[in-house]
Each structure stands twice: as C-alpha cells, then as structure tokens.
View 1 (cartoon, rainbow, N blue to C red):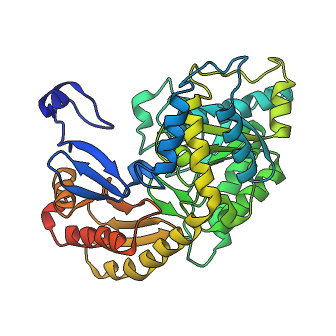
View 2 (tube, rainbow, N blue to C red; view 1 turned 135 degrees about the vertical axis):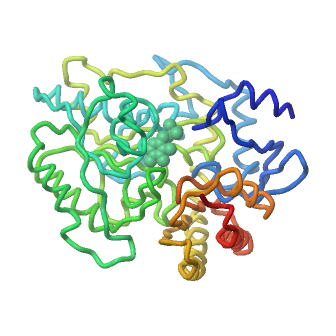
Amino acid sequence: MDLDFDKNHIWHPYTSTINPLTCYPVIGAQGVHLELETGEQLIDGMSSWWSTIHGYNHPHLNAAAHSQIDKMSHVMFGGITHNPAIDLCKKLVDLTPSNLEKVFLADSGSVAVEVSLKMALQYWHAKGEQRPKFLTLRDGYHGDTFAAMSVTDPNNSMHSLYKGFLPEHIFANSPQAGFWDEWDENDLDDFKHQLEVHHKQIAAVIMEPIVQGAGGMRIYHPEYLKGVRRLCDQYGVLLILDEIATGFGRTGKLFACEHANVQPDILCVGKALTGGYMTLSATVATKHVADTVCGGEAGCFMHGPTFMGNPLACAVGAASLELIEQGEWQQQTKAIETHFSHTLPRLLEHELVSDVRWLGAIGVVEAHKNVNMEVIQAHFVEQGVWIRPFGKLIYMMPPFISTEDEIQKLIDAVEGALHKAECFI
Ligand SMILES: *Cc1c(COP(=O)(O)O)cnc(C)c1O
C-alpha cells in the first residue's frame, strides 16, 4: 500500500498534516477481525466506532447490498419513494419508542443532529415563539458540524477556535452518579437551575441518554434521565435524545432511554443503523412535533439532502434491523457486560487506573495519564487487537458477536498496556 502517499496527502480524522501518526493498512475484514496487509488478524474492539455490531462481511448484510445494487444504488428522494426506504422506516417506527412516528433520513450522525435542532427551532417558530437556545450537558458529544458542535462539550471541541461564528448554547453540569452508583437527587440541581432560568428561550434539551460517548465515555444513572424528562415536561421544552452511539443494543437495551423508561420527542440514530456498512442516519419525531413543524410558515420541514434515503444504505439498514429483530443481541450484550463486570474492577488495583466502568457491550478504563497514541496503538497491534483510545480513556465496544475469548484478549491487551510506562505520557 502506498503509505507515503497516504501520509503526504490524506487527512485522517483529527490528525495533523505536519506530524501524521502511523496508519495501519487494512485489506479486509471478517467477523470480528480486521486483516492487515501484513496478514495479521486483529480482533476489533471498536466496532469501527460503534457501528459494526454484527461483525464484518456478514452474509445477510452482504446479500442485501448485492441484491439492491443490481436494482438501483441511488435515486433522488424528492417526489420518489422505494421499498428499501419503506422497509427500513417501518422497522424504525416499530423498534423506536412507541410515541415516535415520523422518520427523516439523512446521511450521517452529525446531520441527523442538525436535523433534530432545525426541527425544534421550526417547531417553536410555528407556535409563534422565539426560542433560539438549546440546553445540553457538559462532556457531551453530538458531532463535528457546526450546530452539532455547538451543543458538544465546549472544551473538548474547542469552541474557542470558532468564536463569533459558533452559536452559544447553555450547558448544565454532566451527571456525577454512575450507572451502578446510588442515585443522588442533587445531581440534577444544575440542570434544573439552567432550565428554570432559561426555559423561555430554550427550544429543546439535547443529550446522549445514559452513555456520554466521545465526550468522555461517561455512563450515568437512569434517574438523571428520568428527571430530565420530567423537568422538560414541567417547563414545556422538547427533549431530543441522541442515540447515535447507544442505539440498537449497545447498552444492553435496544435504546438507552429504555433504561430510564423515557421517550424523547425527537430521536437521532446513526452509526449502527446499517450494521456499519454504509453511512446513514435518521431523525425520528412524534406526530405532534412533525405536524406542528409542517403547520408553520414554511409548510414543510426545510431540509433535503441529495443522498437522502439512499436505497443501497436503506436496504442494508433494513437487513441489519432484521438481525436486530431476531434478538440475539440481547444475550450477546448481556454476556459481554457480565464479562466486563467480572474482569474490569480488578484493573483498579493498577496505580495508573483511575476508574473502570461498563454497560452492555461497552467497557471503559480511565487512566490518570494520557496515552501515547503512537506507542499504545503499536502495542495493541502487536497484541493482535484493535483498540483506539483517546486522552486518558481506553475503551472497548466490540461487535456483539465477539466470543468470551475475544473479549478477554481485548482486556488482556489493555492490561498489558498498563504495565508499559511508555504507553502513557
Ligand atoms: C458519532 C456521533 C455523532 C456524529 O455522527 P457522525 O456520523 O460521525 O456524523 C453524533 N452523536 C453521537 C452521540 C455520536 O456518537
């Protein structure tokens, strides 16, 4: 592979052109394995960023893609519809919380978030109210486009770089009680305070339910989310839940909001929607939100991406949801959670480790020090696994089909890194 060309000309996510780190050449992927050009097989502990829940090269998903590409890979969605979109959206309406009925398809998670924010703004405009602000949580992550970034943690996403352009929203302290901790009602104080003070300006609350992903891999108490729903109702503010990372079984429930028995007014899904095959996302709203938006001045929802409802992506998405409907993910994520709960606490004995946490098919080891990315990445590859930490966080979110042995290999590799001082700065 022409790695020199790659190094000199291709930007990778969050990387420098001056000091590009090593990129590992992958030539294939099968089941839970990534195959390197050198022939090595790595157990994937990342599911390619939460998405490859059923594993790579899945026969059912491959068949759906092959069958669809021979019919049509794309047609515009304006004035045209097709079975792949209908099949997918039927399943989405069926699987998502029962109050959600109207599906808007988009191309990526960030765009699904943009769409949800625009929906909330149009909703209040239609009701004749000026509500230009959103309330969200510190340590959150909602994507890299501007509006999504504006509700992402201001420090992590370096809002200072975009000052003057980036809209300024309202941030409440992130939840402190962990998922398995005792609940403390005071946890909601700041959120409640922000809502009390600003609610007349707030179009919606947007947050990740139960697991704050890329903003810090924090797993919080379901009572917090219950309180948020209660307060949103009390103050008459919409609730947008971003399940782009947590949706489709990752936390051990089909959607993380089920841990708290709450339903959002608007839900964003993406990442695992196509089982990691294609880029596709959806924003699903209640009939009330959708009808209010469309009853407003514009008479419609003002959005329509070129590749909206891409048939190829929808066909694979529908096939992935068929696998979800078969239900094996429940035992699989339960088994992974049990394994994490038996093995991760022991890592706390290590002086470098400040916290461990887990839920469903998510395992997190937080260190006292930042990782040395170049060194720790090489360590993981040498151990036959693919884990990509950030900052102080080493985390695993393997494909649901991973066996106990494969999960253990991931944990062993993490433990190995803790014994190598050079893996940390
Ligand atoms: C990844 C992610 C996004 C952004 O999705 P992209 O497909 O990367 O644009 C938004 N919200 C959450 C919670 C995510 O994890």
